[in-house]
Image (tube, rainbow, N blue to C red; front, side, top):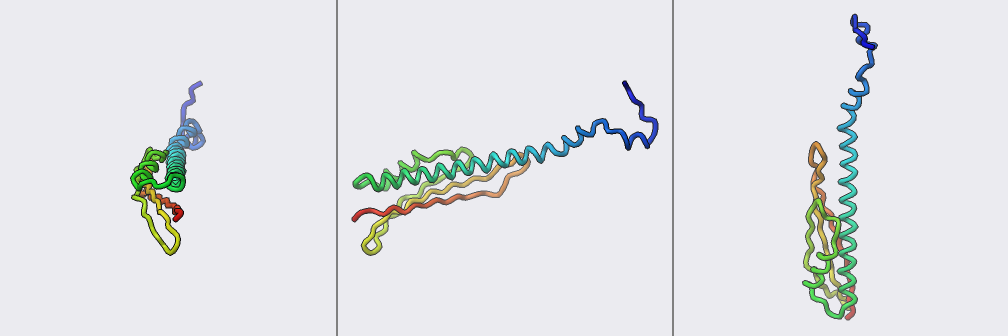
Length: 136
């Protein structure tokens, strides 16, 4: 049935298309939230990947008799995961002798600029460090 709008009073009461207008207003916000949650999840996955890689580098440092710094760095590079939307860098392990203890400091840095559908966020930098004590 086709209704004809006969006056201004009927336009105010007419609800045809109200759901379309509400959806058009709320859909961009909904997409922004969903895409933002995906970006946060990817950053958390990268954080877990960096922690795993540092653990593998620490394990290699302690299990093998004398691994080189290059081998430790390569092991960390091989084991990192979840860094699809950003970039990561592995620093050279730093060996320190303090009193009667000797240790290596391992460091991984991950940088990402979140990309929301309508704008880009501020860059996020995650630093993860691990200190591995060595036997003398």
